[in-house]
Length: 285
Image 1 (spheres, rainbow, N blue to C red):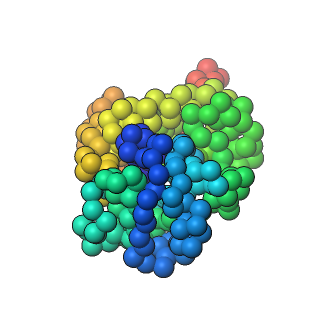
Image 2 (image 1 turned 60 degrees about the vertical axis):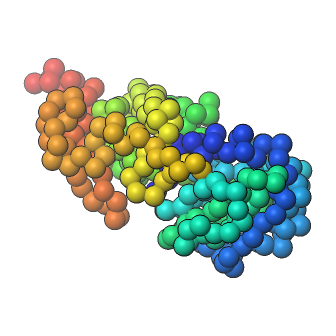
């Protein structure tokens, strides 16, 4: 599933293609994807308008025009490809947008978990209204997350993947960030210390930044508009590495499944208790 780095990679790739360009034509090949496509609204409010900004909000992209913004979400398997024709090139092309006279963006989504929606000028939309802070935002800090996790018993991995807590962290980067931070994914989020939250936020940001520099992670479906795959998959430390040696301590990487999602971690580098607690108990005994 495309996550924050893949969406940010797409945003940056689209900037030279659509910023200050007018949407001169659009076509839809379905009534809905995950949700109904507001065709008439997009034809009336997005067509013939100039894109002034592309904003990323978690895993959502907002192409801003004077009257509001078109919201794009890639879902589980979506991508946007660049062509010069309004004729579909791929089987699961659901929409095509032309900017200027030559650039045509094809929205492709085989599994149809993505969406194309309209957000009014005030920025209010049910998919956006309850989202937590972006990991790169100053609002994503140890104090905020520790306060949000107070008395919370869900595993820390589940907590950071909840977009209401923090936006844009999916399975791949949750596993990688927790590994870098040395925090076991199944520890109760309410028991993560302030210092651990600070370390985890720092590791999230560095992991995401590394992936963005590598063009994201391509495991199956993600490509940028020019068809280039992201190569961060070659730098993953634990995700998809079950049975392989940990890059830090050489212990075999473990895998568990919770709610249909695989979690990869190192039992040695990511202990089930806080290192501070372990040190205190050692002193007592």
